[in-house]
Length: 254
Image 1: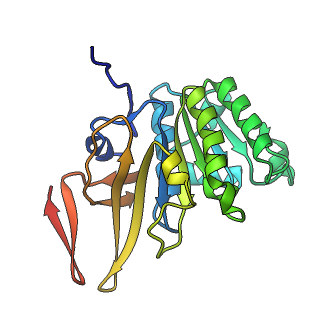
Image 2: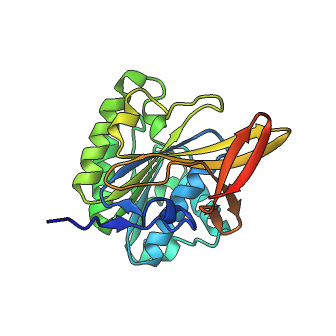
């Protein structure tokens, strides 16, 4: 007796082809990368695609004001306000602590931004209210940057809630430009999947690339592929593979 894997389409052109059709449902995926690699855009694109296809979502904002997030999303043509009004989408404000006039209009606010227990309570409320199927936390590393020893424990708490409530989640993880890890000791073992975005300089030129490090519950491509950030979001070139030859970058047909 074989179980059919339920998959969640990312909505990022070219990526689902590398994932054998999408992310297995209820997986908690670490989206890791340095500054400027497109992690936030990836998460927002994933959520908006879900909304367009009748799948409610929640975005936890830990590094940016919710007002800015809505503005940035609208710049890509992803206007989430109507979905908020319809009760399909919510932003959890874990950034302002409730300070400022704009923050007073937010429905889901974490008053003490360092309190993981409060964050989880507010997140649970938002997921239940909108019946979320997709969640993005941007960025999860904010929760343990100053105390890396608790990184795995925080990750496991979040995973229990996110998977337990039936969501398929993307947890954005910040790493420094030179760091080859995934952003915190033990977090990569707790995650069901890891997608790594890189921005590397070769011969004075920046090259964007993506690699799927692991994904529980499915076969996945294990090669490095180029991607671009366009005015409509990320596009992954699943039919091209990047090879680094000395100081040269070669794009080969996959």
